[in-house]
Image (cartoon, rainbow, N blue to C red):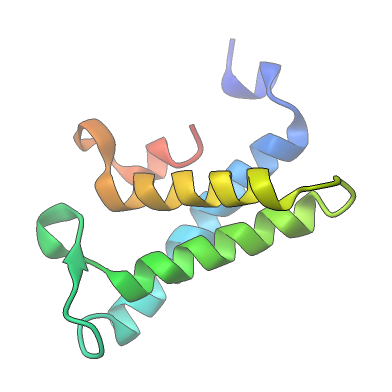
Length: 104
């Protein structure tokens, strides 16, 4: 069975939005602002910037809070999900591309 067969549609949608919008914001902000204002380089051989990672976390957190607007205390799972997506994008576990690992 696929991931979508046992996952609620809203969670599957958020995971795809994390990948599309979060990863895109990390790339755009990281390339535009990373390295010049902050010398911290993270992830794959120093190719990830702190600015890009903060942008990804912020966008993912806002996406989760928006999608689950009707859920009480949504900030806690939104924080955990955004942090997990950001760390996955930053570290790329097992050397697998983050485009596959972020939604999982």
